[in-house]
Length: 432
Ligand SMILES: *Cc1c(COP(=O)(O)O)cnc(C)c1O
Image 1 (cartoon, helix red, strand yellow):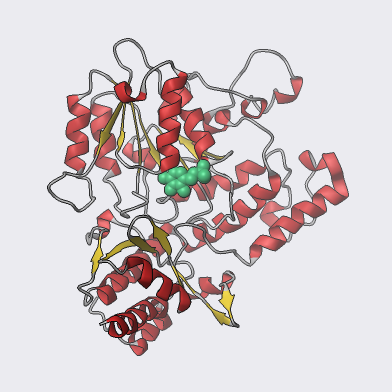
Image 2 (tube, rainbow, N blue to C red; image 1 turned 135 degrees about the vertical axis):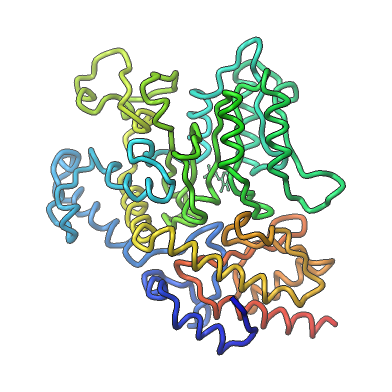
């Protein structure tokens, strides 16, 4: 694509964008009656217009049926496919869309709990330290919640995090903040005798780098070390093939690129190869075999597949929001979303290029990034961020010096991206 930095060009790209109608399905936040340029879907995705009706449907079912809502469909579903839906099997209606975005079989995925909760639950199954193998390989400077989860999970086993955690970081001499796939692979091979598990994010929240999950998972498989990914920034953003890559387990949140709402329900992936192993786990009755759950007998019998990691009665209003937003992503399709995303983020890269004051941390290779670009701005980072916000351009600020901007293909436009370049010109002309 040969880009041009002018509004008419951006508008022309919007005209021919096959996904352009999806923007209409979201509320774009406004200020003074004008839509904001919202480039923050990496932090909290926007509200689908369908969300309110989805929530109200379940409120109506509760109103009309009370407890019977678990066993009887609400019977007021406008969508025929959902007409038979009971709360008891509600989670199953998210499965085909989740399987699509995760590159998984439906039996391998299940919406449940919250992300950090799921990290602990999955580590309870996949981190089984013994005298010989007790180490965990991870990414240095990964998302804080992941760091705290690992640190405390290790202590829970009576081990010392400084003895157990092996953190792979950027090469000090490069100062890019990026991490080489080969460095991760070499570390896995070098520590294979003592590694009990690998846990890392698939897409770095700070730099925006997408790791080569397929290659890393393959190395882990060769060394027989279970590997799990935190896909908070990856799901709904970059194409994933968790099943084919042989990833052992994964979890994510759905309030970022999946637009499920603040604190929206998380989900897990557990590869089919583990389904018959009856892995140890921290269990609850919702993970019990569905056909026998209400027999209330002692002795835990896990439901098949990822469902067997559920613990508690699901939050139906949260699942309703999740399902409504997830179905929009699945309808657009990850293939089409990714095609637009590469063009859109490529355009952002292009409009940023003339500004010497800005260093883009995120790799320029499309295979190593999703929507988000992370910008370092010499000295003036905070001032620029404040200026962009005043101009109605919403990104986010990550201490100490990083602006993250994430044009998302579901609801952002090429004109949104053009506006960033336009605002930058004004900012730097003013401060020159
Ligand atoms: C957003 C994010 C989280 C947040 O975890 P919650 O349990 O949902 O609060 C965790 N890890 C990563 C990598 C994230 O990007």
